[in-house]
Length: 257
Image (cartoon, rainbow, N blue to C red):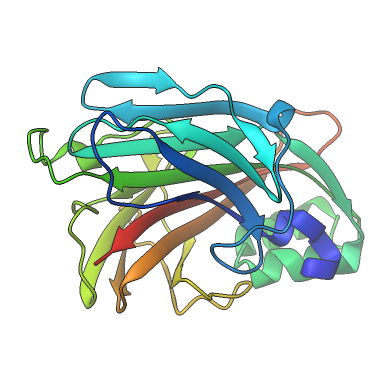
């Protein structure tokens, strides 16, 4: 997939200097893209960003002043008390893959509905034209418990979003994280969800399962440090004439004690 899809095959994450933060004090957050979590091979350019926001108990704030440093896109984010979600979304980008590469890609990603749709269209042996977006979501936590401890279920409004069903603040090694994947506001059933920690390479996720009928999955976090959850969804394109398919790669990063 790396040779076939280039950067589309990479995962993209928001990685903070620290997951435990102090309310009101800026923290550096990096938008990283690579095959090796949580590193970055190349930066997203600022003009590629469609939205970059922080959501605190006080509301939604646009993140500005992000810039390229080395292989990362860097931003300064000011968290609120309790839990702050940060989300970056990239603009849709076109990629065209030859028939063999595209078929390998969608099969390895578990996109059987796209395999079947291509067959029904008579396009199994056609190149794949795809517009893809990356959606990276981050949970930053303080020790201040003043916010509503169920606010972690609140959605930030991304097209494809991974919503924690338990508070990601205070997760410890050996805990199980329940998540729900939603697409355009509705639970998404049958999508592959992968999870991994530092050192996870490519798509060799230590934990991988499909969501149930309510879009839910259970993932065990068996070590301390940085972790991510990841999902991909693809549909026939109705927004772009130059693409047959549109996809969203979504991640959620969080810290485990």
